[in-house]
Length: 340
Image (tube, rainbow, N blue to C red; front, side):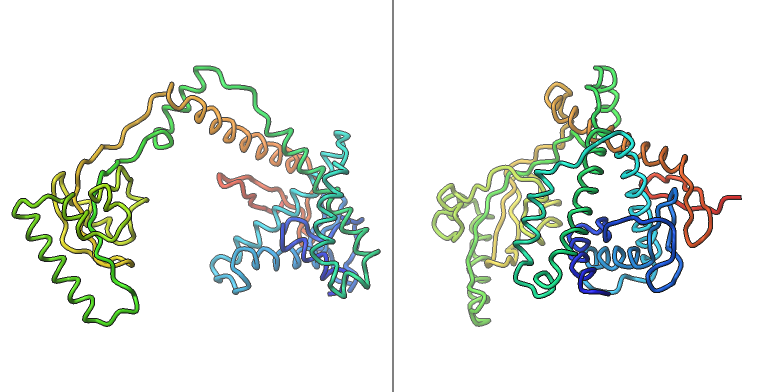
């Protein structure tokens, strides 16, 4: 790969759908190999595909080799993105959309600031600048097209209520637990004897509580947690807010129950279940704004996906020399099938 294309690959690493700019006319790669794909006469070179695929692997797998059973899906995802990019760019140009020059300049300046000290940038700035500017302008067109496509009119009351009723999990407040805690802190570097002493103390506290001792008073006396001043009260929490490893214990505690000493990163903890508030579906009135935003986002996703489907339906797409039709699946990925 040339130094110029190495520099452009940095753009792809940040946003891998930015494959090196300039979708040229149909023809072989510089090394004589055939194009990876041709979309309505615009060629995607094998090198462009490999650059985008390598950037996608870096982004998703942090330079590790992707599992063999996931590689085919990732190749399809990259192929879809490159084909969609060509078609979206053509559609944006057909609609007369112009690049946002101020945004392009800002992104170019940020890129230059990041790489200005690298020899590759200093030696090839002119050539790289032209290709990078074109890539940024093209992405600006596609970004604007997507933003325009995703705009949805406000839903009617009937549509909003239907969405709310079809997605109760989006609007249900999870079960809330009100817990109190006594934490006997143990320094991680302490010798094993410190843990044994803390365990003896914790077991003694559990016995006192079983005999009717006041939990809040013992928390103020022994707990090393900031909640000690409140008698150990942690307030209302849901499962995702609980310390790691105690969920299974807490799940089986009834209001008023006291746990056995539990090992946490900070030390040993004793919990009391004060109250359990069951999960509750919020009313549409309470979540109206959130429901409108979620509906608009879902509607926008649908409109953008349908635009891609429509653009593909009217395009001639050849991948590896074979003319294909692409069928959208629920995930938004397209499955290519040979045209007969």
